[in-house]
Image 1 (tube, rainbow, N blue to C red):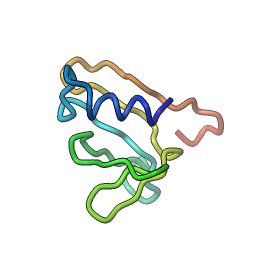
Image 2: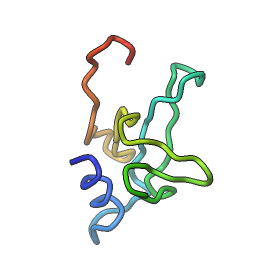
Image 3: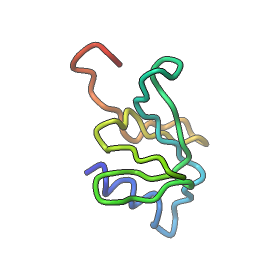
Image 4: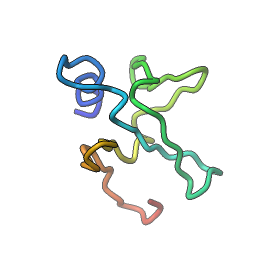
Length: 82
């Protein structure tokens, strides 16, 4: 499901990847979160890759449309850490 959503944002002709941001868990960062534009990633198996960084899908917390503010995906908080 998540992989299909990201692929749709990357490849659908009516989608503009630069309009979307992925927020992911990165321990040690402020609020344990970092973000990356969908425009800057590639999908490699079960990871997002940008530069030399590999982000497993299970660390993705949210996908948001920057233009509209719409949240397309939000990970359910089950342990109180997010």
